[in-house]
Figure (cartoon, rainbow, N blue to C red):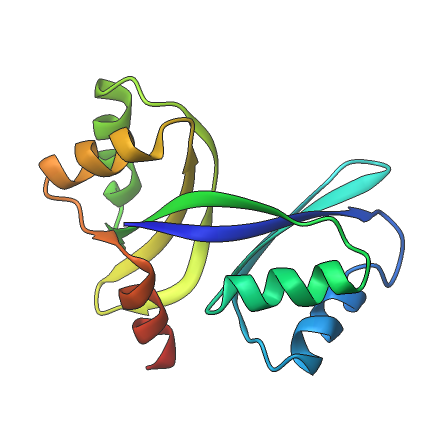
Length: 146
């Protein structure tokens, strides 16, 4: 139920984001979602793609250092309090969220969030026990096609 996410550091200068996006485009790899966090000197680009191994290989071939991390994607009701319900489950289980970001995918009245936990296996178990739909890679990629 975990999904592979690619992360890489980018120098915080104009045009630096274009290079990895162009490399992936040239390799025929579509970016399903991404997050970019920055500091004054560098940024961290986090990507979810369908074929993470091919993407990692293409980026590394260009000289990039790419880290692979397991993240968890969940459905959340797209209404006031939807996120609070999930966060309360996570808090009750004393799981630590390292970061999270929204996925551009919607499914009916639900949105999708991506979480990086310090213990993703425990997070999956906790969320599923509370009836929260944890989305695996295959389901996520299929939904992205629609």
